[in-house]
Amino acid sequence: MKQDNINTILHIGTFLAVVAGMGLVVWEQQQTKELMRLQLSSDAFSLDVQYDAAFLGEDANSIEAKACTNPDTLNDAEKFLLTRHYGSLLQRIVRNSSIDDLGNLGADWERQSFFNFEAMFRTELGREFWKKVSTLFEKENRVRIVGDNALENSKQLQQLEIGVSCRFSD
Image 1 (cartoon, rainbow, N blue to C red):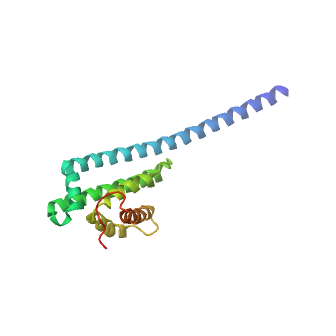
Image 2 (image 1 turned 120 degrees about the vertical axis):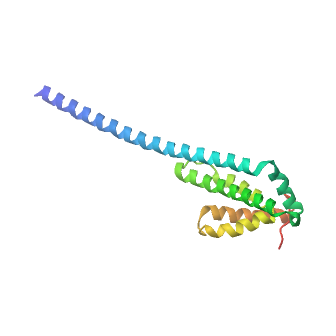
Image 3 (image 1 turned 180 degrees about the vertical axis):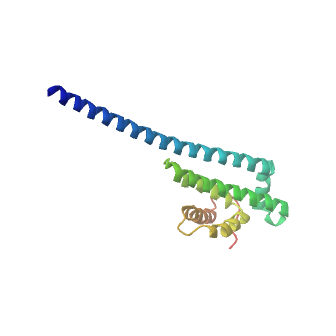
């Protein structure tokens, strides 16, 4: 009888160990799947950034400086490139938010996004771009909230004459 009790306890223990092991395997597969999704997203985003950098070329900074100091002298091609640049910045912001949603990595995507928005808001063309595309996001969308806050912050910095030298038109 004592031997039967020991065998029963060993069988139950073995069964519980197998079930726990299977549970760990399932959990590990889910973790691997999430990491794979994050890696694929990150790789795709990196390729987009490389493409945008190649598309915009080295003139983007000089065109942005021109948009800041002499916006009336921008030609259509320069406006197109800047609009593309602002679209690329917005794409990075949305990606950061999406990666944060997928991975819950605890990365401060809002702070990173804030800097991208501020780069966008240096020029009137960038601010106009945001005013048009922000309507595509629901008011409660966190990308829109961060963008609107960054726009307001940029206005306040301009009033204090801190930061970039472009002026807001009222």
